[in-house]
Amino acid sequence: MRSAHGAVGAYQGTWDEPAVAAWARGLRAQVAAPAVHLGIVFVSPGFQPHAADLLETLRIEARIPLLVGSSSAGWIQGGLEETGTEGFALALHHLPGARLQAIHMEADAHGELETPREWHHRTQIQPGETRGCLMFADPFQTDNEGWLQGWNQAYPGVPLMGGLATGAADTRQSQVYLNGSSHDAGTVLVSVGGSISVVPVLSQGCSPIGEPWTITKAERNFILGIANRPAYSVLVDTYNRLSAEEQQLCRDNLMVGFASDEYRDEFQPGDFLVRQLIGADPRAGALAVGTRPRAGQTIQFQRRDAAAASTDLVRVLERTRGVLGTRRVYGGVMWSCCGRGKGFFGREHHDAGLVQEHLGPLVVSGTMANGEVGPVGGRSHFHAYTMAMGLLVGA
Image 1 (cartoon, rainbow, N blue to C red):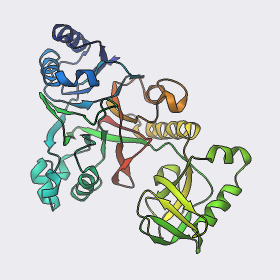
Image 2: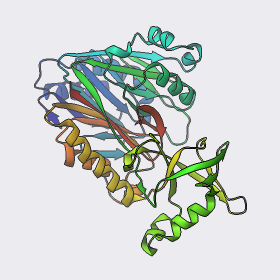
Image 3: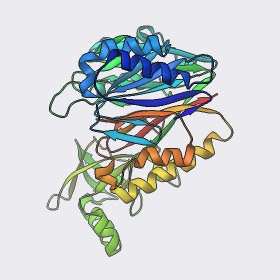
Image 4: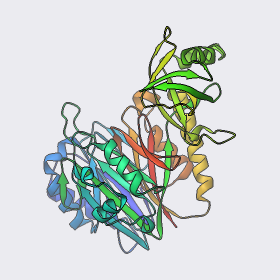
């Protein structure tokens, strides 16, 4: 797939430097613009031993001044999602007027950064100079939750889109890439500024059920009281008010959404940060959730299944199209949870296909991720079973 401002394609096969070089030159020839400013690459497990040679070949033959990416158990190119195939996907982006800065942070680097000013000095990224960032992170050796906490303090309100790299299913090995270097740990961060912005697209794959409630008692990761009633009783009442069809859909698919802004009069589906409902104790009236709730928070129970996820993604894409208006979209980078895909939706290319249907044609590359990153309520969070995409848009 190509446009006036970029191209994306996939090389399938085994490592063969002359063949890869010829393929890269061919992809570069598809870019009508005079220069490529950013390359995004996602590499299959079989190519990981050759990563350094691959990166250098791509940089030289496709004339890429800044190349970033990660290893990937499955990649996205245009409207296609590929799994179980050896090779790589590469996107080339012409971004006129963009100011791009990239850095690799070691796995434990954030532990030494205690203040926002120290973050700014370490990354050389000033909050007023960035219009959004892309994040490629190792899932095994890096304290990503700690990293994200520091990021949110240092860059409040800056859109951060990204995800955790994947690799071979039987190993705990992944890679992140910056130019000609392959790293087994840490985070590669790309700041996008100048005349280009990162517009976040985030679909958590849920539909709300029932009505919003206020937590009145909580302890550790347990919700004990909702509206001054046992939390479990409120969940049971919510479930019992559903139709028989909705009840069937909710079985083993219930989640909890936490409102990003508790002072709103009305809530929309995207206003909630979705977290797992881990378990319930009818005798204690408690619900265990995958976060630390607090009294006063507004919550709404959520249903996550293929139908809900599809509906939510369409809603998000239609809203994004309205937000974009007449602004030029130069491309996008997508992280789709490895728990989605054909096994979840029952058909191939679900997420990538819907993106092209509602926003395309777009030069999009992406990966099946171990966890996705995107903002809810102005703060960046880790998500699961989510599609997160950063659109590169003219400011």
